[in-house]
Image 1 (cartoon, rainbow, N blue to C red):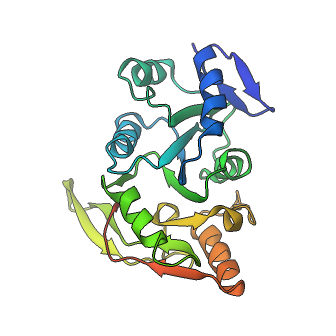
Image 2 (image 1 turned 120 degrees about the horizontal axis):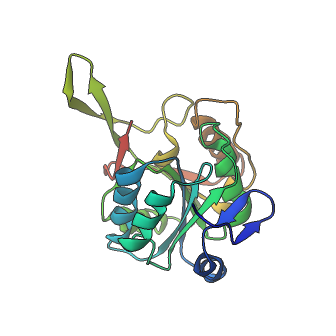
Length: 235
């Protein structure tokens, strides 16, 4: 069992004393991009996501992971023992009960309480990014001071129903409309992310992206689409 040492307001749980101290240091960091991760009992997949960011060619990021409900003690112990949480940029918290609403409530918590970087990436614990993803995002952001969203294509992984042992990979272009863009398929400036809340009753998570994009256009800022495939969406 994991001992609850402290709680943030009424719905976030710090898993040990060191995590409480680490959270305070994490908030003081001034990294360019905050990576907000929502997960639920994703063992090796979550570890792969953490590793792909620890392997980034740019260190200008920090990550907060929210686990939806109490975390299995064995999973937490393995994350600690195997040094997945040793990086000062990686912060793990859980909620004291499971929301079970496609991660939207947890994403709202991230935006409200943990987004203090200039840019935000929201993603899930079973996704992967190439090691030069952050560096590529930095390069795109620097092209124009008015760029307020960067969207990029991804490789989708879906099972082949006729061959269970195989998976079909294909590229999806980042269309900025519901049903065509995934939550992990764009980064957005903090000021636009904080304008909106995700709808906990909606299955599709593209609505948040569309809201941000509409606000960006209304205020005369720019949206940039890349052609580099740096994101693997693990369905």
